[in-house]
Amino acid sequence: MSSSPRPRPQRTLGRAVAVTGRGYWSGTLVAVTLEPAAADTGVVFVRGDLVPPALIPARVAMRVDAVQRTVLARGGVEVQMVEHALSALAALGVDNCRVHADAAELPGMDGSAAGFVAAIDSAGIVDCDATCVPIVVGETIRVEAGGSWIEAGPPRHDGLSIDYELDYGPGPIGRQRLDIDITPAAYRTELAAARTFLTLDEAHRLQAAGLGREVSPRDLVVFGPDGPIDNLLRWPDECVRHKVLDAVGDLALAGRPLVAHVRASRSGHRLNAALVEEVLAAAARRDPLSV
Image 1 (cartoon, one colour):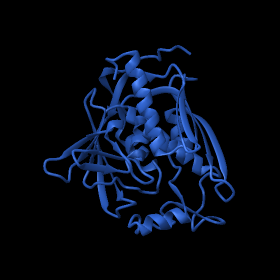
Image 2 (cartoon, rainbow, N blue to C red):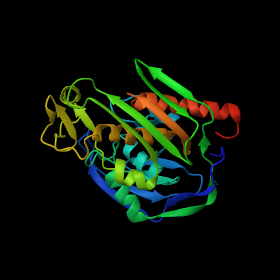
Image 3 (tube, helix red, strand yellow):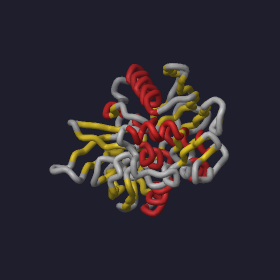
Image 4 (cartoon, rainbow, N blue to C red):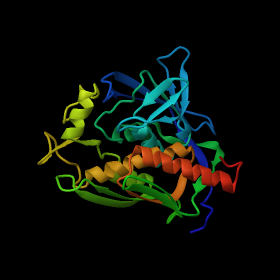
């Protein structure tokens, strides 16, 4: 394909739309409003429960390490579990949005991005008076740690594609692989409803640390030795689908759409963010004014 994707206008929401639910890890009931934003705003999280409200741009420079979720922080103020909202906005092509929350953690809902997709579809998507300038990956960029890795290479279509392999070894999750072009249509039907999953050991460790005490196996997918506990899978390979969903959200921390083919093996939030940092560094070397 051409190294220059077809230009398109930046996009935002047609109107404000609300999403409510309980934060998985905090247990706090939270209301989120996805609001239209002007061209070149990007995605910005707004902690509306603070005075004055705190603004945290969805950029990889704002990311802080956290267990099994993506957390952004600025000036000592955090917004947690942002990956599902970011994933839905990025996959559906929303470049500019203010995500107004009245608590530190976004709602977990059913553990997927389906609620955010429904909200975005309800609001509608409209063009802004500016052009979207994506980051086109021209050479392979790879990061790895402890047997896990993720790389971005030249695109195979006019957008992002992801080939992800998950490997939990022997057991009910096992090894799964998904290779998919991230288009709005494919995201809606193949990824958006894929839910967060944990092993029973992981769930016990999180609850021992004081996290997720109000979450039950019916709120996400918890795997025991024989499979999901008190729940049914939506796809046989729902776990790898959710890993791809998460990766779309983490890669959105580039602040602009990525046009690349991404391959990954056992990558999580930390490695996904590390790849974004390397992609941005490579883009800055090519064109210092572009990032």
